[in-house]
Image (cartoon, rainbow, N blue to C red; front, side, top):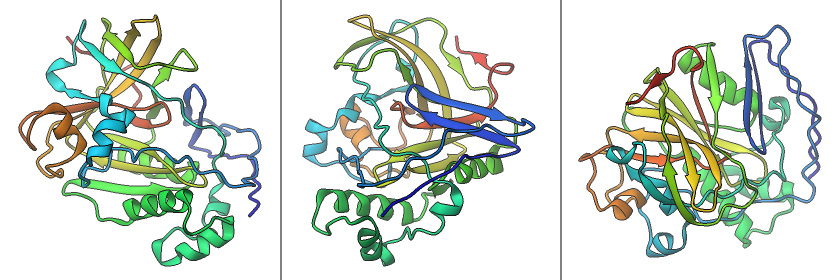
Amino acid sequence: MELRGETVENKAVGVNVGHGGVSVDVGGSGGHRRPPYVRVDPPYVDVQPWAPFGYRYAASEDQLHDNPNVALFFLKKDLQTNTIIDLQFTKASTKNKFLPRHVAETIPFSLNKFDEILQQFSIKSQSAEAETMKKTIKHCEEPATEGEVKYCVTSLEAMVDFSTSKLGKNVQATSTEVDKEESQPQKFTMMPGIKKFAEEKVVVCHSQSYVYPVFYCHETHTTRAYLVLLVGADGTKAKAVAVCHTNTSKWNPKHLAFQVLKVKPGTVPICHFLPENHIVWAAKYEAHTQWKT
């Protein structure tokens, strides 16, 4: 299947998500113009260990040993200057570009039409790519957890609409940025100047593995977001987004975070860093950010 695109324009909000982070224009007069979309031909699906940001899921032994996301989790009490943490930031794939909404909305996105989806993209039903896509759709179709509002978006416009419907128009999107192309597993030190996003209400969008960009976006009232400066043992510098969950009582007791941190659901706040291609939306923080002491 060949998918060609066009520029995205949104009179209220313009968004650009790509290599090196996220740029957002909110409230502009003409929107933010993106380069033309490229076609998806042949299709590309980033097959990788299942991301641990679906809190209904239990972690397998293989995930505990093989998943690079294991190191992303830490306890809230450790979110402070001079904390040293083992981390690896993996680079996001940039092979696929966002589809404009009018194109994305013409493509089926449901388990009921999964065979049709595979046929459209010429993907074999028994392939690893097909299994990864099926997991993504299943994750998107499952009901939200208690206190969560969720929505899987298949276009930039849909992401903007969902986020601003929860937060209002005066928002900013932020993502983790790492200054090196390849970051090896190493010890990172949290530097002075940890910033807490002023508003307690945030929308977090997690990139999903699919044939074109899909983001699992969700909003809860028990999530806090921070911007953390990190320096690695080899000199790598990162401006990382940390998301902390103050109530984990509804998570799967065998979720990856509990197994890694050796804690039980609902006992302590749990935090994790966002990979580079995940996005947090919050009230604009240039004027309102609180400095965490």
